[in-house]
Length: 264
Image (cartoon, rainbow, N blue to C red; front, top):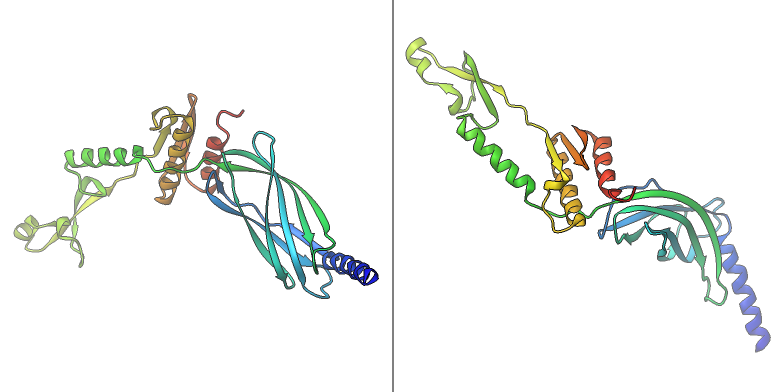
């Protein structure tokens, strides 16, 4: 009986080792993460020379947080066939820089008597943005702009009157010059210059919030909302102005400034 058990343990070690042979792991391009929000770190797992599928694996990520404290997240998979992308859930506790140091793949196949491991050194740094929290700063600004537009008598979405042009079918009634019917015996339409939206400048000192982290969360929300509307946006931090602009690179720059604020 003892010999049988020892033989079974020996075979377990062999199968566990074969389960990891030829394994290849790649960390996919990192996306955006926000503090205290669920995100996924994605890895691609494959065998260089596939003979049989993977069984009973655990994939663990070793990460070092902004204070240098290491922590680990992972996921278990009972079966993997060929090449597969795996999303590993992670919630980062705070904003700032993080370092993905290592990915470890563990095999407990077939019965867990023998555990085999293979590690991949990654050393990839990334930034976690502040948790976006809804706030009233932007909404008040929009209401003030609307009231100013109404006080000038400007039509919604337009500013200055340019003149009269030929009537076009489908012109909204508020843009039709009814007086032209009596003057020229035909309808004309009013033409206005299109109003350009002024850029949004966020001054962190004026953002609502009880402490710095709440202000940063509010500013993060304002930036995301403004970019969804295609609005140019700038940022004032410690008397330093980041000029208004649009585009993904500018969006990332603003969010990164908030993520690292006070840490440099």
